Image 1: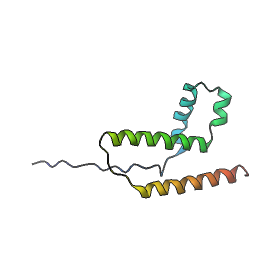
Image 2: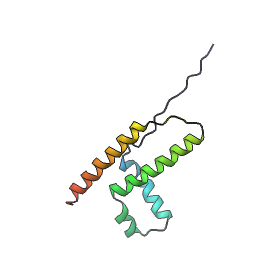
Image 3: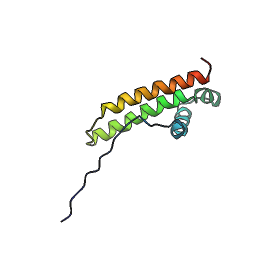
Image 4: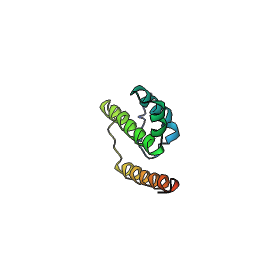
Length: 96
């Protein structure tokens, strides 16, 4: 007798790495008609992270529509704290 095991996935924006999303963000800007100069200006960690979170959330919405039901609100809190820390780090690096 074989038992079916359910796989559990935790979906989170907690550990999104901007370097993993940069190419996708660049392609998105190109598809939307931005010039090379505009793209270079927009390729900041803050903008890439915004794109990553928005895109990741869309993926999660798709998964939820396909039956994924678990939502971990503690991850949302951690993602917000992580985002604040990243923005503070970016501000400090740019001298703001």
